[in-house]
Amino acid sequence: MKVLIPKSKPSKGAVGKTGLWRTSKPVVHHDKCIKCVICWAFCPETTIIRFSDNSVDIDYEYCKGCGVCANECPVKAIEMVDD
Amino acid sequence: MTSIKQLPYEEYFLAGNGSCPGCGLTIGLRNVLKALGKEVYMVVPASCSSVVQSPFPNSSAMVPLLNTPFAAAAAAASGMVRALRLKGKDSVVMVWAGDGGTFDIGFATLSGAAERNEDILYICYDNEAYMNTGGHRSGATPFGTYTGTTPTGKKENKKNVPFIMAAHGIQYVATASIAFITDLYDKILKAKDMKGFRYIQIFSPCTPGWLLPTEKSVESAKLAVQTGIYPLFEIENGVFKISPPSKPYLKKEKRKSLTDYFKIQGRFKNLKEEDIRLIEKWVDEISEEYSSMDGKKVI
Image (cartoon, chains in turn yellow, purple):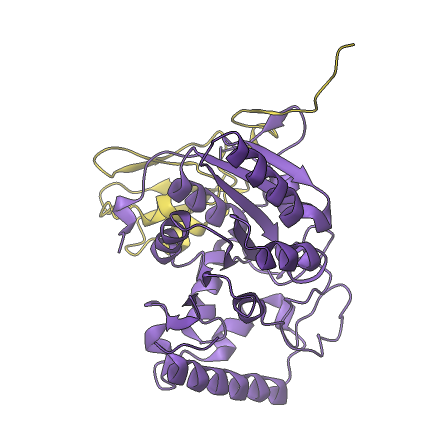
């Protein structure tokens, strides 16, 4: 007899493209960025991409637009704009 | 002490999960998993985390994870850790439970596992109510808070579970906050290398449940520490120690005003002037008590 085990497999976007939930989107002003990576550490969604030189970019496919990164940025290098 | 730049790049909790925008839980969970690495087995009782990890057949967690009924997390983890040790595996077994599954419904099995000193890392993410069911009061809800079942504000104080756990005689108890990520990371690293039962409670705001603007979740967690309402400490083998982020705020003149903390959260809309004075008096008392206990054996 075959036994079915209700086992889930890890995958990105497990509930779909969560970027569609967004009403405003964060935009990084790279000229102001001091590469402190605070936005990356506090992103609830893992959608801030940190590069090896500590510069950051945003994965708009999954970013839910909560605005935590813009609120926590010490130099206000992230701006929330209507999406 | 680890700095933010020293946090590892690897992610074990993936993007596109089912959490609300600005969720405190996922900020905590992804950084906890960074500290624990790949060799961890998670046990999750009914809570927001059961939903956040996403519906079958997908999962956002990159580590093995067992979902259990509300009351069974610590019991299931006890069985799991014993089975792993019999198989000769030395992996960490972590329970990731909400405050409802820790303070109220899961407390019997939690207390049992702590008394048996099972080799479990028990983490409670404390969002101060049953947020997954729509925001009902729990033992973790503080005085005066609006929830679905306390529309005029809760009349009782929050249960002091970290001290109850320390009274079980376990070797490590700590409180942490998602706003002080490096302090949280260091506490997890410390607990990871210990054997026996360890309890860590993480303050993690809930944006819909606290009627909080989504961008303010980290800010409100920071204010909870800076106003002294949620002190961060460790109790290691009965010795109480205030953690560095909370240390300056033991002094009354350094503490920020409680009204700053209350006004950004809709859940405190019922607080009257005399309620705020009462909470202020309580914060003063607790801070004084904690400063006198710092560095001493308390339990």
